[in-house]
Image (tube, rainbow over all chains, first blue to last red; front, side, top):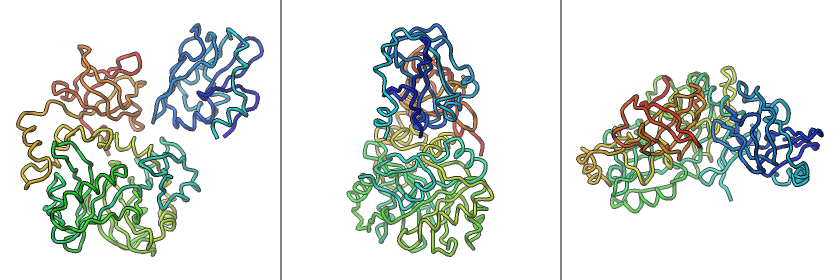
Length: 126
Length: 366
């Protein structure tokens, strides 16, 4: 299991990548996809959807179980990963890469400081 | 402290993801549910189900005891035959579902029960043993592998001199496996495919050697180790009930589509009186199968079932994404009016009501 050091994490097993231009990319961790098992579809809110921290921005349905996606920070969706529509297994195969879920505009970049580091996240999953 | 089966180290070596199930640490998956499910439907897969319970019942009172605690007619069994059955409480609620095996020696039977119910069942059987039968829990010593799929017979045939094609469904024979010792080849399973469940004493036959022999024999067919995840999707495609979900102490066999095993015309058994009365009064709800209309809707345990008028008429007891059909399907209890095939129902999935049609299982042809 990998936990890239340049990403931020949440206790809900999401990762967030600060793109450095007021936007961020969000997905679920390798640990999360492993727990879910084979993912059969990902249902995401649309671009333009505004949310606060801990709001639900989508749902992941795996064969065995269903899991909601919780926003790590406040923001607005500017893009969703359309590839997941036809290929939800990208989340299993490449959770930190091609399996990304949404790009957002950050409302409050200082919230990033509250998120977990890779090391802190590894502590809660080990 | 979680219990483990004799195959625990094999699972770890095979890269299984292990979870707690019924007090045991069990593999939920190895490569993934989809791969494992497909292996069983198309070739052959192997499940460790050693966590299940095996009770040895013997003595002149053995049959009387089994007849009293189970609903099917065990007097119909001949040596080498097995029978699906269940045990009921006095009020008709289900204690457990099980398989009764009649062994080759006189007055000897084995009952195979669900892992989560071993202690409860043993206590129940013993407390109803007014026949002086011997009741012994063999579970800790019994290893059990389910080898299932269209290539299961070919795989196992390489390992034994018995003619496996000769063993009819719900029959069994004893024989040597790969020179490792005597095992029971039982033509039973929980997948809807051809297959065998292989029982043996873990102290006299080496479990890891059995596992390795089976995988070597099945290699040319693409044999896969399979976990509890695939076991659940496979049994749901067949509409087989799972104790704790589809059948519980709150449900009785007549409403659980288990009327076919409930022999109300045999002698007295626990629950008979209440079940006869219920049958006379009419069953007002029934366990039905259903298939989702929209392929992106997956029903899950506990979701509400709603009729066309918006009334809640029941609850999903089991649901999944069918890997064979690529659609969501499930089972649940609904009021009598909605039990006919083709009835439009709706499943409350988060904020929406997703359409589904009642359909009698099995959902796939095997």
